Length: 210
Length: 221
Image (cartoon, rainbow over all chains, first blue to last red; front, side):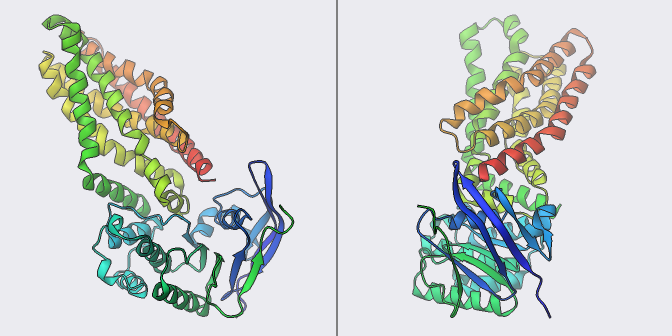
């Protein structure tokens, strides 16, 4: 089965009047991971935000199955799972309530076993009833990753997913990511550390812009 | 629609977990209204005459108090991005946020106002008119306030700027809200005033969600 083509063509973004990146083109097949590398300020986050349509690119198009995703932004957003550099958790909600609320925002029903699976995958089952504001930074990151996993979205956009994670949590993440890719999912991850997938494609940003 | 309900329930649950935030608004309303007899003097006929204006103006100020947190908390903890990424119209999400704000502040204010009106010596019919105008008028305040909150998101000293943006836009609602109670007392066309208030609410309902959504997208960039 040929995978639905996801193509980025000639993408360019400016921030504060300066180009962050220009003429960026790549394609991503099903089961593929693209690691975004580059120094601070190279545009990793901007590229992820442009792909999520949170930032309007100055030039270029993103095509899914040959169609510009801007034409049907809501359908495109439904395919995405987002992990920003902020965790996106509500401190006054419990871990479980945060996941249910996030699933609700995606407009989908909350499958109990799916949430339990996502919590278990990041070793959070014992924390489901804890208020998110009582968690440590690493625990919060794990909840945010569990949210990505629970979304069942085919495309993961991850900004520094390994931030604040300890070694066992990093292994949990690698395991979840590998399974996502093995089942035909795609992922883009901005990262400084080793993403844990052998032979990963890398896109180095910030070449040519001092 | 499920996303709308989920967001509304989430915000109501958050408000329930922090009852202090809503209580501060209501306490401000009571204290600020109580200052007027002290400043104006205790003459009953003067107080009864200014009651409608006082209770309406103060309700407007009180509803401003909680507006600066309306989108700011979502902005700070990253959940605004999740809202922007929701696979359904952002305008609906904005409506859910405004509805939650109204249920937490506008509705309690409309319930509390007649109680305070008694202290100003308002007639029972005027008290009912007061509650009715606030019930119809406060949704407009939440919608216009939501617009001001979205526009000032991330701005320094956003709170003061928010009030400056929101207050002039609330003037028509204030005029017809206070005017309706006056009209009721003098036997003029109360229903006409109320209908204009409702019309203002509908205009706000039909226009502000798009403007708020655009402002939030801009803030998300």
